[in-house]
Image 1 (cartoon, rainbow, N blue to C red):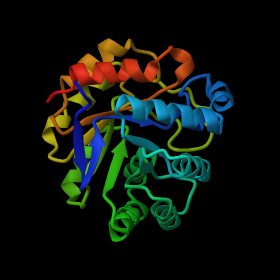
Image 2 (cartoon, rainbow, N blue to C red):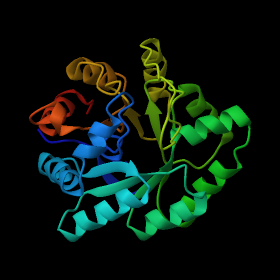
Image 3 (cartoon, rainbow, N blue to C red):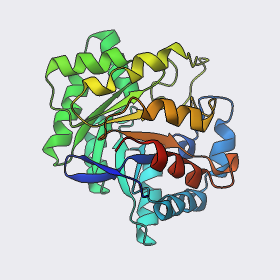
Amino acid sequence: MALPTTKIGNVDVSRLVVGGNPISGFSHGPRDKEMRDYFTTENVKKLLRRCEDAGINTCFFRADKHVMRTLNEYWNDGGTIQWVAQSAPESEVIRNVDAVVAYGAKAMYIHGGLIDSCFESGDFDDAKRQLDHIHEKGIPAGCASHNPQHILQLLEKGWDIDFFMICLYNLEGYRGKLSVSQDEKFIEADRAKALAIFKQIEQPCFAYKILAAGRKDPREAFTETCASLKPIDGINVGMYPPDADDIVGENVALAEELLPR
């Protein structure tokens, strides 16, 4: 078997993609510095090469200067993995879009923390402006959220959204910031609420935080998640090689076995 693909706009994307939190030092736990120390540019490139070798053709990484320079170096070395950019909330929204398009992103989505903050404040202007500008630049545009109800409410707004990122936990912590002091809670009851909405949504959706930032057994988490997905949906998994001898290969094997066809 090989990894199945889905389409984001006209872009063929493997239905298992590698997420960027570990390489950016976001462990959602006590391991931020450990991850920052491990993920030198060379080790990021090693991870991406292994992903490509295993059939993962796309990374979902932050739209910041560190990521852009690292990917630029990787592509100059002959790598071909595609980049779907997650907006960087510390950046001005229009400039952030322009930068990722200039660096070759195939699609871009608005960070879930920004979307969640919009619902809290009632001010959606920046999010809508960024979404529209992504489309104006000619690439598919998506939205993420840590709250499944926010995804359903975005659909009611009638915005032009090509794909969704759905977090399996309603987290209140990072919200895209570069640091956080709040203790995040991974509450199991959140998973069922998030998994219930995938089949209500016409567009491709990617589940993220399926492993609760390393807190759950991979087979159990993949099995539960894949049972709720449509055949056009996928999974975004951050991968930290010190956790397993071949963490990429293990995740790919689970995805090949369990993703609905």
